Picture 1: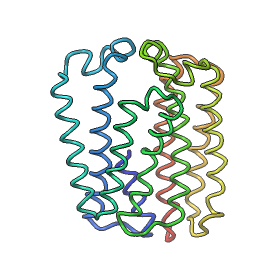
Picture 2 (picture 1 turned 120 degrees about the vertical axis):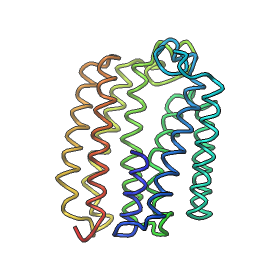
Picture 3 (picture 1 turned 180 degrees about the horizontal axis):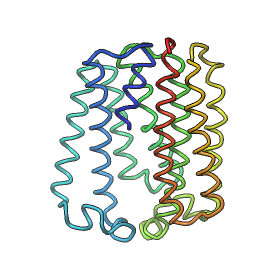
Length: 266
């Protein structure tokens, strides 16, 4: 999905589809960068995962630590090379993203909400990166960046509810650990609601938004509101695991809405 977000951002920036090189290297940069940092995240999380998710690749023994380190380094290096093909500014942006995720995986994770913000910044970064890749930072991209940032921050806060036992044992200070699952659910729902409200203000910042933006984004908005309701009603690990998957669907729908809304010809 993060690779697709770059393609969407490139299309929005240009107002048409990017050329093959921009599309391929833009997608690969985001895809490989996230793959590398997610593997590194699993390496750092191995002790927590032994409690929360013992069936995951490393704690289950399906992948060794040495193999995981190798994968993380290879994926990250390929991502940086791919970003350099697009230009020096895209390379520097990818380098910043990699540094932020390295900070998160080694230190920031224990910072709770700050860690959630770092992750969400990187998840939303493709909208900025895609604009840089095609040399067209259209204002609409910054609005979509903000919407993606808010929605993913909500998801990150909610995820902490399902991981309270492991996080507590490792000193990871999520909102769910420090203030309880109910407060975490309320905060996550608040972020979702703010994102929903802001989605209707998009035309104020860019009047070239296609009318096809609305039906798809409204459907995604209803999904976010539904997931918010489920979280507040039952802030338990079982509900959160379901909501985590649901939110990815709503985010994908939103991405489709951003795509069709960002092409004036539609």
